Structure formats: structure tokens, C-alpha cells
Length: 332
Image (tube, rainbow, N blue to C red; front, side):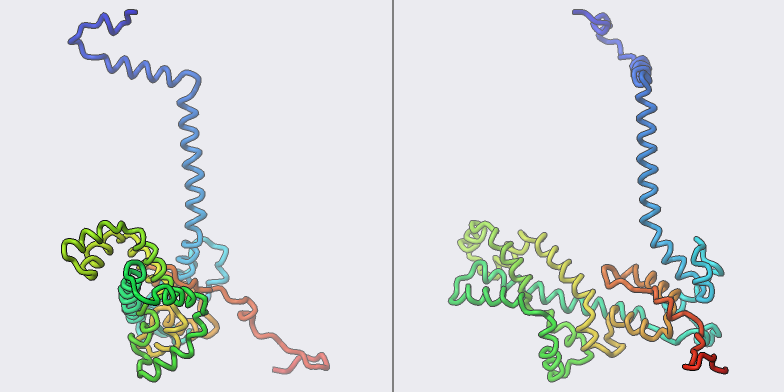
């Protein structure tokens, strides 16, 4: 069966213009092209709507941080801040002039944000790095080494996960106090720096999946257990180590109660403790200032405990005239 392409000379190039025009005519038949464009625009509109809804709370936080405390509640229905000001952000960042007369109208609570950020980073490093190192060594010993009482010791490790952490606060605090480690980095990181049951169990299961042939080949070549552990086992399980490191870092960064007990001094206060102290110093609560603090720390402080800037409206009601038993108002 001969076609038009059969009669075309072998050296003649194809006519791409005619092919494109034919494809356009076929797409235009039945309005399929218009339906395709309508479905695309409809999908983009739905995605844009969800994006606006998702960004709404962020915009409310920005609006509240840029609003003056006197107009915060009167302009709550407005999408834009009334009388916008950078006073809240400057005060949180420590850039406000102590002689600013606006400070007389507010409480004098402040937080050394950058010092608290540095303390949080140091506490996370001191708690996570030794924890992952020692837990990996213990997990490899439980997975590959043969010694007396191995199963019993591992069972005790697993049983330790059933002990609530609150029970250990008092004995740990007494131990840290006797060592003289109060208000120090080592005192805050000591309970987390050693092996944790979850980390040992997690890594042990990963190490059990390592092919024994790799380790046996290294033993034949004269490698010791430390060489096998650091040069073969750990590189094979990089993904498991990275996952455990992320989980441990998030838990250490969000930790509040233990650093609150041990590190009360401003020189070692972590971010969670410093923000709690800052909020406690706000007389009656300054919502604009708290939102500014939340916006500024959100660049560094993620996954932490959410701030609760909204206070009960009953606290903001003006003076209420109390009535005595006789029903007459008290004279002012």
C-alpha cells in the first residue's frame, strides 16, 4: 500500500510546517484544546487558593508584629497593620535605644537572642554527637560481638525505654549538683550524651542487616573490629545514621524542662528557656512583641514549642466597678 511519503524523493526534507498545521487542525476539532486550557487554569486557580489560605497565618503574624500595641485590637479586622512600626522587632533583636520613651509604656523584659541561639547550638552539639557515637558503638557490639550476658544486657536496654523520663529528673539533678555542673554546658548535656535505648535498638537492627561477607573479608585482610566499624559498617549505614542524627537533634533543640532546671543562668540559657523567661517578663502580655519575637526566631528555631500569643480577653477588660453587698457602687 503506497502513501504520499513513498512518492517523496529520498533526499527531500519533510515539510514540518504542514505537519504542524495538520496537528493544530486536529487539536482544534471538538474543542479539545480549549478544554485543555480551561482545566489548566482551573487547576492553577485551586492551587493559588490553597496557597493563599496556607500563607494567611504567616501574614497575620507579620501584621501583628508590625502593629502598635495600642492599635492591635482596634484594627484586628484590617488586613494591613495600622500605624506600622519596627519597635517590636528592634526590641527583640536588642537594637532599641534604652533611652527610647516608648520603653516606659511597656514592660522591660528582654532576651539576648543571639546568645540563646549560640547556647542552643552548643547544647545540641554536645548532646547529639556523643550520643550517636556511643550508641553506634554499643549497637555494633550487640549486633556482632559475642560475649557472656549479651542478650540480658540488651533486654535491660530495651526495658529502660519503659521508664518515664520524669522519674529520672530528680536523681539526675542531684548528681549534676554534686558534680558542680549546674549552669554549665556539660551539666545540661550529660543525661543525653551517653547511649539512649532507642538509638541503640535502632542502629542494632541496621547493623544486623549488614552482609557478614564484608566484615569477614576485612578480617581476612587483617582489619580489626575498630577498622571494620569505622571504615565499613558506618559508611554502609550513612542513611540510618543521618536519620537518627536528625531525630536526636530535633529532640535536643526542643528540650525545655531539663535545661530549665540546670541552666538557669543567662550565660547558658537555651532558646526555649530564654523565650519562656522573656514571655514571663511581659506584664499583661504584649502580643505585638511576642509575635515579633516569634517571627525573628522562626529563621533559626524550627519545630519548637509553639508560642501562644493570644491571651484571654478577660485580662484586657478595663477596670470593673465592684459592688458591695448593699448594691451601691464603691466611691472612687
